[in-house]
Image 1 (cartoon, rainbow, N blue to C red):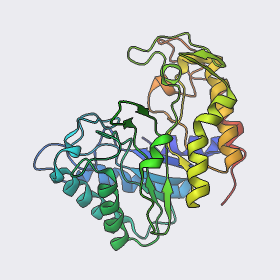
Image 2: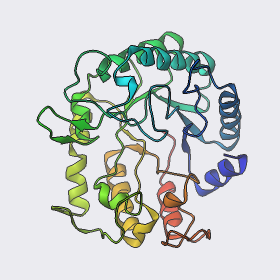
Image 3: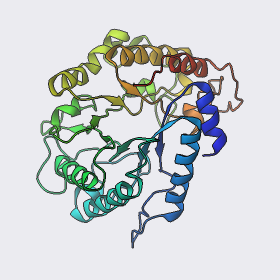
Image 4: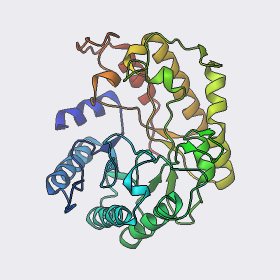
Amino acid sequence: MSEKDVADFANLGGNLLRIGFNRMPLMHKEPPYEFNEKAFAKLDQILDWCKHYGVKVVIDPHTMPGTERNTSTSPDDEIWHDFKYHDLLNSLWDRIARQYQNRNDVIAGYNLLNEPAARLLPFPDGPADYNTLIRRLVETVRKQDKTTPIIIEPPVGRTVLGLRVNRMQGLTYLEPLLYPNIIYSPHMYEPGSFTHQGVKDFKIGIKYPGRIGLRYWDKEALRKTLAPVVEWQRLHQVPIYIGEFSASRYSGESGEHYLRDLIDLFEEYGWSWTYHAWREAPVWDTEIAGTEKDDRAKSANAPRLQLLRDAFARNRVP
């Protein structure tokens, strides 16, 4: 990530970047699990760039000891089997909160754990209890930093009966915390066979609106999928932030239609959001107009880039 990336994003009208350290973990994932000072120096640099260009930052470690993949967690990760990894993540957030407690001029929030994947729902006792982990992390952050918003993601997983629970439904398994400035942040990639077409083994060519799997998907289907989030917000009176949503570039015009419908719903509900992702990978790149895997040419007139430009034009200071 460069200063030009931040400047170009600000010129597009964007005002919030969620910075994920998946390729440069803030804590090394192998023993002796030391802090990655190179990564912290990079974060310091990014914060300075973002402050200069008027862009806020969500700090998202994204990966940490006890998680196998750098992109999301897995139900089989060691973090759900051994409290040692809770201790390590806790020490990481203690460091972050101590170091950045006075950077509210640029930091919009601390994203505690990216895409938790529960071993079982409801959570079993022990290291697999996500609520226990989150409560401990929040207490640690608030000892150092009383004001910076803390962002909590709901889990995805399966119930004891084997039923799939998506991230919107996963909110119902969280214990609301009474600390101030807590934000809840589901990711929206439903239906996954559409949003991830062309990624790994997902086939290309699925259209939206249309029948996807056993269901017809359109804006009203998206509204129904988001309904648990709306109800959670009404019940607990908390802010909602959609930390990630997207559709692969290979989805073409269908993807733009899907994204436009989602953004309209987010704005209707008054939620903050960050598109996944800005200049991170070709599959999600808004600046590549082509829809073939080999396309790499960037264009200031790419349809998805214009879609974001139009959406960012709605931004206002809260």
